[in-house]
Length: 68
Image (cartoon, rainbow, N blue to C red; front, side, top):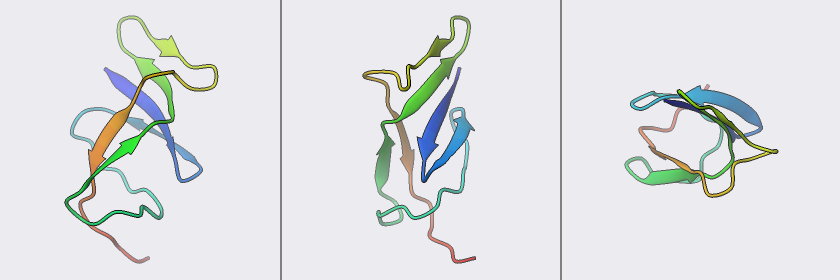
């Protein structure tokens, strides 16, 4: 199963244990953040949001902050 989320003005396709780089997250390393804008849930029966899926959420842990 995978999900397409919107974070920082961009869309990301994520699956469990993925590591992604998101711009400007206001959280400390080690804390859990929630992405509430889920646009699509994929799998055997995909669910497409209009524009988002009500009640769907993806959680992730902040690993580190970088400067680039």
